[in-house]
Length: 335
Image (tube, rainbow, N blue to C red):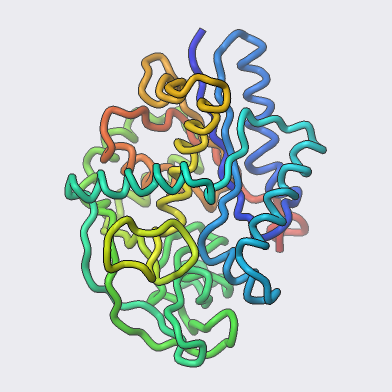
């Protein structure tokens, strides 16, 4: 018997789940978990609602309600959807839980103290009409790599490439549709460049990964890893645990990944075994699996392993079985 940790990507709590989500990230791990338990393996199965970041705030602004109301509505709906499909997590967490804040802030400070985070100025899009910076989904434009016309400020959903807002062709504000200007602001960066060699070496032992996941990750790493900003000019999210940063928050794709750990901590407390989660993250003879859609590949095969490497002595992903998009008439099912 071995221990199996199964984490399914945390869905954004800004809209209903559809068949593409279920097929891409939740049905397959549920089957995988059931199989492993049938053959006697010890399994922990975690997912949860990703309640921060710009998808939530944009939905709230468009509907003239608060981000809290959006997150609460869809978290309840997620639970109902999974229950109706008999998909059973050991624990379905929320990134708004205080334990998550605490865990994310502790890891942020740990990496900062070790020199894996740095602070520096950067140029970010700013909407003069709306009077604010435009992180992530507040800005859209055409992807310079595949031509997708609704690429976001941090990633193109079509080709999966992570993006810098300045790369977008014909950028526009998603709320007022005005062309942004670019202004200087200060943020913390994850020094991915410091993990280039370690990630390359780690990836050499992953030839059993799915071809699409392995090829995408190899290309991403071989193109040269750069510092990546992990804070945002927002008021919604996990606060930066330092004085003077009251109006900035930790980037959702840094802290949401930590939801796997915080969720397993909360689950361990709930079952009366507070250190149980450590058996899966630090123990030997453990295999960790991350189930997700292809748009989440770089976050789970590059950024998350780098964070874990920075933390030290914690189990890295064994496999990341990411699925391609479910398509209908040649287009993404969700479109």
